[in-house]
Length: 220
Image (tube, rainbow, N blue to C red; front, side, top):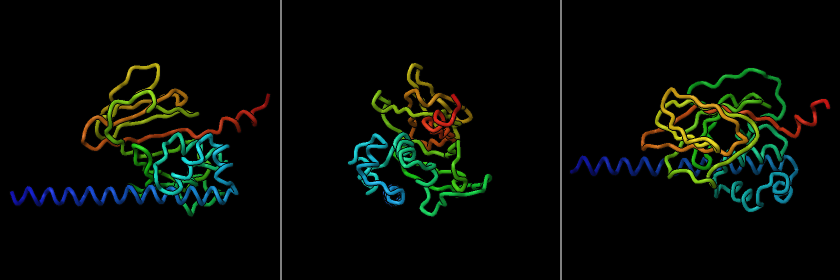
């Protein structure tokens, strides 16, 4: 009985530590996003107009009250005309010449988002066309249509641990286990969830292409 009580106390302490870390990650991301917006000379009203997000949503993200989804991170970065890496690092240089970078194991930038915790890899390289992430996926209820998101680009994911359910519109949901890989068009509405209490972690790579810029730059 004494051992069980001690184990429960340790578990509660670990949960408290994790919750505190989550709140800190969310607060840090919000502060960086506010600093980037201000550095770009944008008011909340203009940021909302450009991104298509509600002003109140941006305000809540910047103040650490909510975690943004990946889709909203993409929208904000494009609205501010920056690479996504600038949202993940407060000391990131806007203009860099390096074209090669390495992230050692466990040393990526941690970012807390809705239903996910991202470890952003190779963040020192600016203006990337691919965003590489190691992602901890939360267990949650079966995904409803309103839980799915879409954005420009393509994505691939490789399961490192746990079991993942991938839902992509027009297709049957698929269960992925360690060693399984999927690739899909990000313009299709999609979502992920962990199926078990065990840790579910994936390597996730998403293309980051500003479609409007590409069309403008392509010859007629």
